[in-house]
Length: 206
Image (cartoon, rainbow, N blue to C red; front, side, top):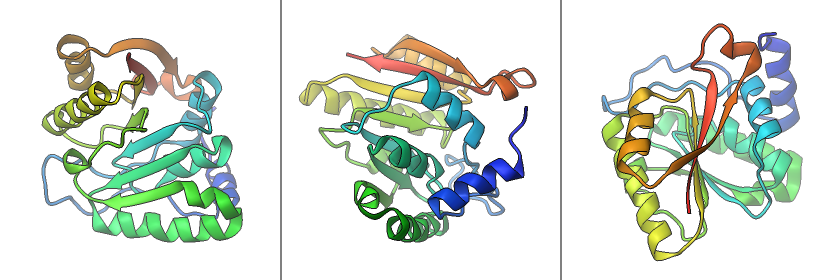
């Protein structure tokens, strides 16, 4: 079964947001990739096989219009901070947040969007889960991972990295040059059979 427009519309109406579509313009930096939201069917699969908690402090790198952030906040009440370097998509995320908060009340108080470069974002001492859907180059990813590990080294805690449609470069870097270890692989059944890239890899550092 493939994700349908009806499925997309169901969640967009539920959250009172608009996150469909793809990027038609190019980022100024070659290190940042074009916008593409994680499909709702993939998010359903992730939520079924990986546990999020209300106490989680999650960072969504390359959040675009905020789909992942809204989905996780709505169903798990987790705090989510979306980081987006593109001003246009950041503004779209903020507009989505206004509508989401109006419809969902206090849930929106735990959602934040920031317009900044991922590698310059200061990791909060409470952030414990980090989501990536191939938002940028290997060089930027390495800097962000090192920022995460530096924060976890100062403020001791377990941290998870969640990769969707993981690149070989990301995987190689995590498995050969970091203390992160893979703890789960989650395949999106209706998509994976046609494209094995449609999977989540969960890496953990303790």
